[in-house]
Image 1 (cartoon, helix red, strand yellow):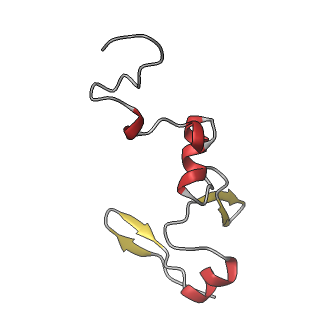
Image 2 (cartoon, rainbow, N blue to C red):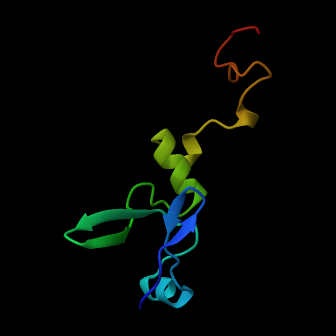
Length: 89
């Protein structure tokens, strides 16, 4: 496949055809890793933040299972969390 480098704002870009992306399993807005080898540009699927679901992203961000993540509903109006003992708020 041959393509042309075109101006894209203040940069240049290369358009990749839908069949090529489908063949490689790439999807729109997917993060990719670019590297240079001699006179070639290599495009690989990025493994950084490669989580597929919101649940996986949240668990990765907070470092604990989704069931242990505090939600807005679990906080009081001031964001202090629910009373744990005999405290009076």
